[in-house]
Image (cartoon, rainbow, N blue to C red; front, side, top):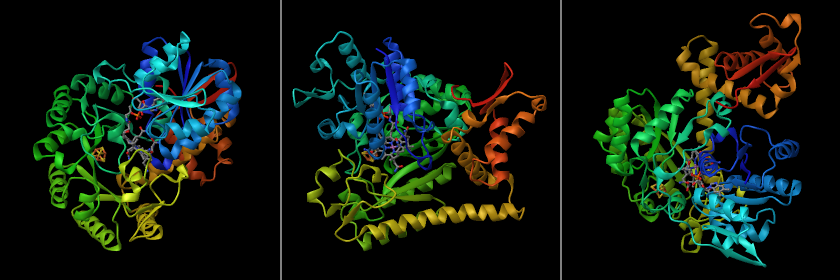
Amino acid sequence: MRVLLINPFYPISETPSPPLGLAFLAGALERTGNPVKLLDCVVFPFSRDFLASLMQDFKPDLAGATAVTMTVDHALEVLAEVKALDPSITTVLGGPHATFCATEILQSFDQVDVVACGEGEDILVALTKALEINAPWEGVPGIAFRDSGQITTTAPPPLADLDELAPPSRHLIPLGRYRALGMPISMTTSRGCPFKCIFCVGRKMVGARVRYRDPIRVVDEMEGLSALGFHQINLADDLFTANRAHCLAVCNEIIDRGLKVKWTSFARVDTVSRQVLEKMRQAGCTTVSFGVESGSPDMLKRIKKGITLDQVVHAVQLCRDCGIDPHASFILGLPGETEATLAQTLAFGERLKAMGVSHGFHILAPFPGTDVRKRVDEYDLQILSDDWRRYHANRAIIRTAGVGPETMDAIVIDGERQFDQWLGKIGRLREEGQATVEETWPLVRLEHTVVIYDMMMKRLLERKGVWPAEKSDKGDDRPLGKLIHRVSGELDHPPERIRAAIEFANEKQYLVLNNTDGLIRWSWMDYL
Ligand code: B12
Ligand code: SF4
């Protein structure tokens, strides 16, 4: 079976990582002999023509899209185009949104034939086998599908043994584009989380029992990613620090190999200790993100977070002592939120800031599958929108008895303004010549990213980066100067910013120059 996997669009401002779930699915499919292609709408602009030519070349039998709640509309649009182009293709939707909305999706969207619930490796392989021999879909585990006007759901497969899984097929992902954009790459060392926070679906996707990968294989993978030029690896485990022995084993393996790699991870404040953090620092960990959620002890109990504010203060102080940057994230608008609890959260955020801890605010998005959505009537919570595109957690789509959406939005907007002010300050210092290269780098990298992203999404290299070679193109930097000139008119950025970004991309070899058969052709280094 030829399988097309689809990563739907979501904005660069959300710091996208290369799609790890799809890479795992592709690995499982390739291992069982199924050719796979990946359409990545995060770093390529989607168009029907682009899809049509991809489908004409590849001729898929099966198309599978992934989605979180905020990206499901785009995933459905792409699947509708797939079906319109070739109705004989079987379509599947999977990921954390579809898993908990299978019936609604199958009832409303004809372009979806199958919904895959939970971890997809075994499901997708079983589905390809069933399609190959025309077997009934009842035998495929973990799916929902329409069957004579009814929706049939099959029992989930056993949770995978992580060391038995095929390695993620990252060669199918345009990693070069993510690297050019400066995005971190993610990998996992475990799956699962034993805790029961009422706003989270992560645990429900991957189970409460944490499964671990062999630390040797984990570090092999890290080594491979670092060799590809990814200097920041994000450990996407739900809870990397869930098990002290596993965490130490991974760190020791990195240290023993002398691997110099920087990485970040998620953790709970009650699962870190000085010994673990010191080891993590020694092994290259630069930042740990803690879900603190609220500065109100009552709220923390209500949302079943199971941590105390004292534990938060202790954990972030330990991080600071060990040389790791702690980051604390809060969720506004959880059940029971009032002006008073918001004030507690803001005050606690300020307290952390005074300790040198960065923090950020999201607003509760009650995702399908969460307890908070399922039992909304038991909480003082009103869900204001079922427009899934608004489930990005940056603006309020809920109100509690005590707080309206405007109040919560104002807090997040203030945080965004502070970030802009910080960038503005760096910009001013740069103009006055009073900032070092290191100090201006966050702003400069952001400027490069924005230009490079616009060039990718406007297909500027494809449209403007190809021309018949002339005498004037000879010499090392001639074609680069011409490229800058040719694309500048299409970009809404100051000329010096465009030049700096393109020179940077060229120097880092994110750009590739091909000069054969009398044609100059610039392209992005797509595959690594
Ligand atoms: C690491 C992580 C991130 C990272 C990297 C994300 C990435 N794209 O790689 C960052 C920090 C960038 C991030 C951002 C966001 N995240 Co996040 N993230 C996670 C986390 C902790 C792990 C994801 C992961 O890599 N898992 C490992 C891979 C292997 O699993 P997977 O991607 O889920 O894929 C498997 C299955 O889902 C399934 N599957 C997936 N797609 C398909 C498709 C088909 C056809 C099939 C058959 C099966 C299938 O099979 C895959 C292999 O087993 C999860 C928690 C969790 N456990 O799900 C939250 C989670 C996915 N994130 C979540 C959210 C909300 C977001 C953001 C919207 C947050 C924000 N406001 O910015 C953005 C959106 C990004 C996006 N479009 O994915 C929610 C999603 C809930 C929802 N219903 O929307 C989760 C579940 C956490 C939560 N709050 O409960 N995230
Ligand atoms: S928020 Fe974190 S600790 Fe809580 S259930 Fe989800 S993954 Fe586990």
